[in-house]
Length: 448
Image (tube, rainbow, N blue to C red; front, side, top):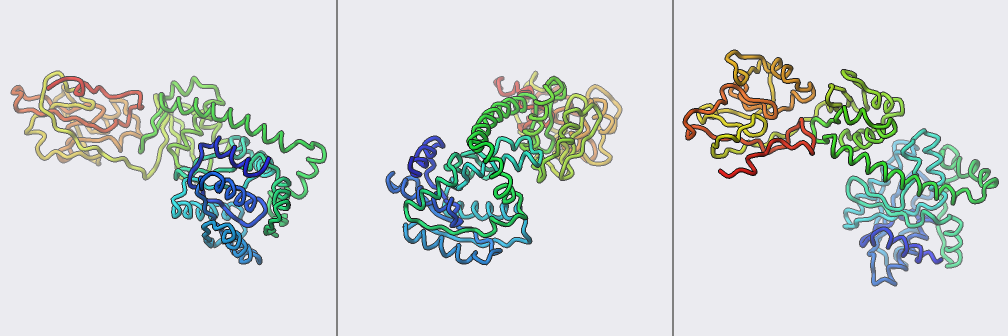
């Protein structure tokens, strides 16, 4: 099959991306990708529209000639070309990769491209899976995907992932096309190069179809990962809250999960709510999966997992939520619930403010005469500690009139004359509820 036919098949399977930025290093793989994409686009009425971008790392003696080669190739085929320089502090593979992707994302944004095409091939998949296995990255064993989407919405497309590098080079030679060789690929200081030069050739000598088998294994693992991921997402939707500043899981539902599924749910939970710069290691996941009431497990970046009894909280220091302004509605009997809808005498509401708790706050609980510290009130109401600093409060000075989502003060008791009252509605989502636990929203269904 011709490379442009490989491109066509992958393009159709991946949703027919329309505006594609090609990561063009000048090496054999990316040269084959760029030329094949160009030919496919030319035969397909200019779709997808393509650009090429070269990232100049500046560390190699041939870096300038690589950039010049890329620009020459693009001029030959009338492909829009851009180049950006990145500055590395050392020889870290991770740093180079991070800066390279940042440069590509910036170039894609300038070109209004929704997809970046990368020249990863069959052997890259094998190397990636082995490296992740060596590092004990269980979730990474599925390898890299033909199409994936980053948090910024940019898709990464790898149409050659099932194609061997030998086939790519043969196609270039048949078309009499040249490429640049990266001398750093022979540097054994990099783990990938060590695998590529010494270990994998020995393995292939004993298993000639090894790379195809790794690729098929990756497809199976990706399918299983997608299935388990969907189960984890369903669990979070039904039994969790990702709402900052207080994400949590329902502890009883979590305790009923299989240990493997607990870790899968935690993985999805952390990805969605914790925004960690470093992934927790296996021991941390084990501790989180086995967490018991009143226990805390420390996570990277100062995050913590805390078991409060009914809920397992992801504590995010320094993160605060937004308070939704109260809606003032005409008073009607039978609507007030003390949770998200509360009657209040107009005279009491005057000069009241919405805020979170402060030292010295107190409340006169509904139905009582004496005041109680807000701390004691929340303890008596069994409000989990992580929620307490983030609950919306309607206050007059240090006196709390309404702990929204929990209960109201005796001062909120309706005036005997209905015309002297108003109804307050808190339209924001209550932080102690999961999405499936809506507050009592009777005011939405009753006429005034």
